[in-house]
Image (cartoon, rainbow, N blue to C red; front, side, top):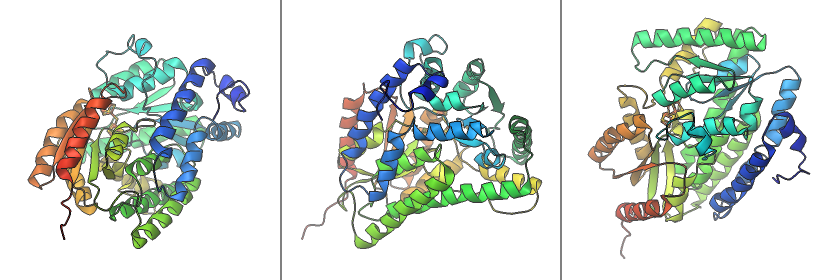
Length: 434
Ligand code: BJ8
């Protein structure tokens, strides 16, 4: 996408109130980042061309679709967390868009509002809003926050001064009374969204939205199941990109495109074709989410000769692993199923969070990972601290772990490469000598 004044989307961006000069700089930075990480890869599945197109139009075509939806009376709802049930948003006729951001932006301005030692993800979404460079945030009629980590929770108070924001109370434990609280929070969300959209939540609309979102997650399950093959039929970077795009693309189109990639991967696996040698060290990455365009750690691992075969993160298995049971029944019954499914997600904001350790080990086993890279954003206390338990559980299971704390800057790239290379060398599967 070019970002000059002749850009076909220039007028739309102006009408959204973007700072055109800064926005242009952002797009100019994104293109080369994408080309360097993605287009340089060998043997990519043909179906990834769709994702190249999506990224090339990241602030163009999809934003145009959102504006058309709004012009027809629809609403756009922005979210920052996996726990916000997109089925409910969709069933009320609104479009759900994930707003987490993965690039440093306007740090000096952001640090007038937030302490320097705030995680990069929070700084980034506040920076995008302050700098008026994100057409998704500017398109949102309502932003939904949640009481997960302290950083986000407090940042929403400030963010709420800049954009209409509604915060859900997420419990931090999973006892029956926590489920009851969460279920009541979903009722409150329904009320707020009914008020926003002017629509009433019906059982049929909820069942349909649930089926559609489940189809999306099923397609991602298929794509990711194919990564168990050796050689891996898709790079970790491309698989990560697919989940990142899942948060804002049109649901039906995305599902169809991911299923097409999955068809291709299944055929590749059957034919023994892959993107890396069969003996390349296989890595599972787990930790804080990686929002677009945060591709740093996958890029370092794969350019160092490893292949990422799974992500236990919100931009990974935590997003697609479980489905909402398609129970049918009335609105109440369906919302019960939604509440239980979402509370079952294993984020480090919960205590205790043993379910995440089980998820990591199961995924490592299923994808035959030789090692685990635990990647937390700096100042993300929940994941940085939980890394201890992940490492202990993995080592007890005989799987080596590399712990990385990083941010969105390129400053630690040299050091990261050195540590990753040493780790890959250590976990490299032994080659049989004839
Ligand atoms: S379900 S991981 S999306 S809360 S990286 S802002 S935790 S300090 S994003 Fe998250 Fe929901 Fe959990 Fe997933 Fe805080 Fe950590 Fe920053 Fe984070």
